[in-house]
Amino acid sequence: MATKRMIRCPKCGIFNTDKEYCTNCNTLISHQKKVEIRAENVKQQQVDKAIYEKEHPNLAERLKKHPFWLYRIAGWFLYSTIMIISTIGAGLAWFIAMVAAG
Ligand SMILES: [Zn+2]
Image 1: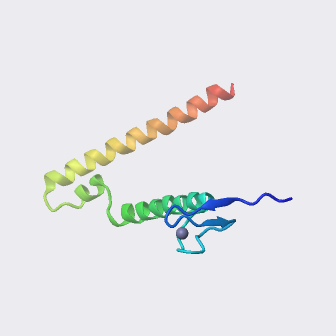
Image 2: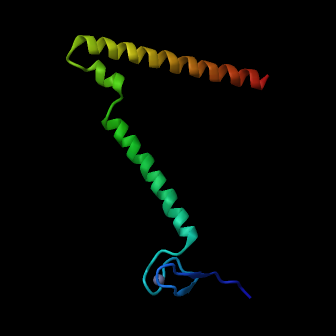
């Protein structure tokens, strides 16, 4: 005999068998579905973040385009620093990978 999952609706108290939504009041009752929706939301947030970052360049990029020359210099300085740090980081990651590989 197949076991069916009985899920009690938290809103109206009706028992539902293998349903994602309550048959009585349409409340989402499936735990699996809740997890899926949450995962979907996380994915959507990542997409939103990527779009936001594309539309809003970082501080270094903004400073580089600033009308006041001192801010532009600061922007380039910041940009160079970020580039150097990320280059060192990449080099370090490569070095660690090489050492780990033996
Ligand atoms: Zn219900």
